[in-house]
Image 1 (cartoon, rainbow, N blue to C red):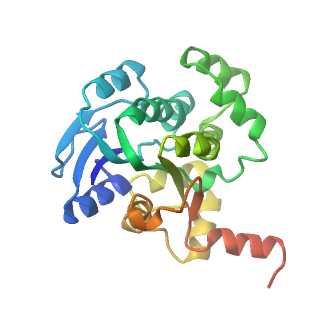
Image 2: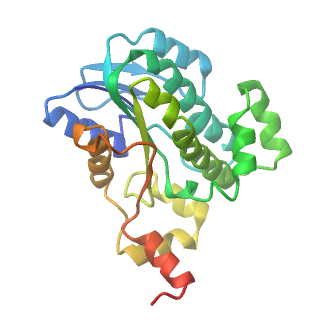
Length: 255
C-alpha cells in the first residue's frame, strides 16, 4: 500500500510509520518537523496555515491507498484558535485536497479523541464551527468564549461529526472513513493533557491501570486501513483501556 500520514514524526504517528515500513508499505509523511526515521517521501506542512496546506497538496504526487489524518495539538494556554485550526479546519482542508489522490477502495482514518465523545450534547456549537471560514475563526473563539480545553474538546467533537457526516458521500466515491478516539496515551504530550484536564486524567488512568501505549493505538489505525476492516465504515471507535465502560458502569450503578 501507499499510505499518506500527517503528524508522522512523533507519538502515535511515528509508531504507525514504523509498523508500516516494517510491513513493507510505502509511506508519504507530512509534519511540521523533520522526520527522525526514514520514509519514502516527506513534505513539511503547517496545518494552522492555509498556504502551507495548499503548497503541500500541490507538491504531493502519486496515488494513495490510505490517508491517516493524525496531526493534532493538545490544549495549551492561549492556543485555542490554533487548536481549532490544526485539529479540525486544517485537517478538513487537507482531507478534502487529498480526496482526488486516493485510489478506489482507499481508507481514511482520523485520529480523534475520547474528548470528542460529547458531540451530541454540543452539536449546535459543533455545527457552527464546521460552517466557519478561516477568517471567521477569531471572532468565533471570542464570541463563544472558548478556552484551550473547550477548543480541544470541540475540535475532536467536530472530527467525530465529520466522520459520520461524510460517510455516505465518500462511499459513493469508493472510499471509506473512520476515526479512532483514544483516551490518555503515553506520549510526550500526555503531561499537557494532565495540566489541562487536571485530576480527571489521573483518575481515569488509574481506572484503566495505565495510559495506552502509542503502538496500541497504531495497531488499531493499521487495522482500519487494512482490507480486513473493509466493512468498518463511518465509525468513531473509542480505545481507552475500559475507561468509558468503568465510568458508565459507576454512573449507572451497574455493579
